[in-house]
Length: 154
Image (cartoon, rainbow, N blue to C red; front, side, top):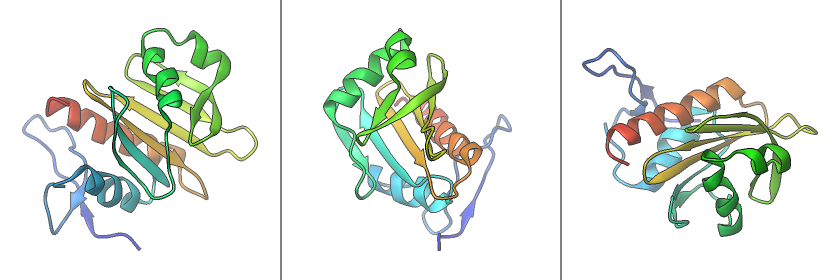
């Protein structure tokens, strides 16, 4: 069971990512992964990874290898390879169903599970949905956190 979550709007009227009620702002990258993404119920596994290939935080049992990152990062400029070969995360390959300069979405054909990868200035926010998690919920959570981090200079 997740913690209580609330959503606020900034001065422009845009929703900002939900944060745990008892600590308005996560203090560590691991807290973003666990308390914001996973506790939302929309994201089954998640990671925040530096564009330099270093892992900032991951959920338990979720690993994005340096090789997988080397395929993902350049795809935000030229998506040909990812569109042909798919998105590989944690040794699973997802068919790329949507791609632009900021976000990529993939789906595993056999299970219906999927992934969302959001590119910030200095990092990637990665989310996987499985076991009944709603694809749109995962997409929205990853996008909100990604937009927020981009606004904060990440």
